[in-house]
Length: 240
Image 1: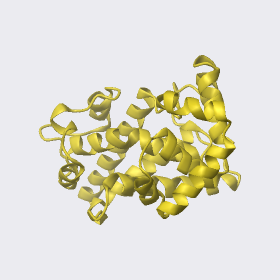
Image 2 (image 1 turned 120 degrees about the horizontal axis):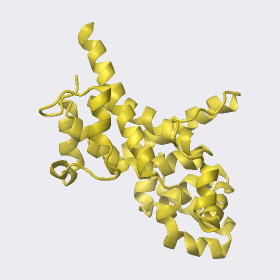
Image 3 (image 1 turned 180 degrees about the vertical axis):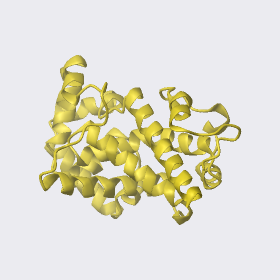
């Protein structure tokens, strides 16, 4: 069972523990990834939660650059985290943990998109989450135009564009996230930039915090679901 230091984790306590928007536990927030990973290996709840909240936005944008729906992208994150945390011993610190997580999310998004292409209906994350279309209307045309311009890019350019231009990470780290070389990153970014309208391209660095944004409610839902499922898996192992 997961160890939250002093309290037992159940699906009920997960919600009360995690529904804090983007707020993190102060004692864990400043810790580097490697220390959090060691704590996660000891099944400490706060370590799992802090790692998820640290990388939620980046992974969501990666998933959203592959699948055209925010709810499906949230499902991708859940599965990527479960894959990573259920066998955290697999991670070897030969590169950045964030890049390893990003690669998992990228592959999960590709796999889920292939499943959806076979005709399965796109699932919804949970009641109470507004649709992407409703949020676009509420937040005005600026974000909608920017996101549409990115969605219109060929997929081979889109994820590179999101990581480099929207997330603002380096070419080296983008290459590590996607499993390609840095030269390919530069080439794809250049071609993506040529396809995006100049005026829109100039606005993206200014407004990038709102592009493919992971809302606080959706972030809480992802964290709660992952912790609950990890806890359920741990209990099943104990019972067997």
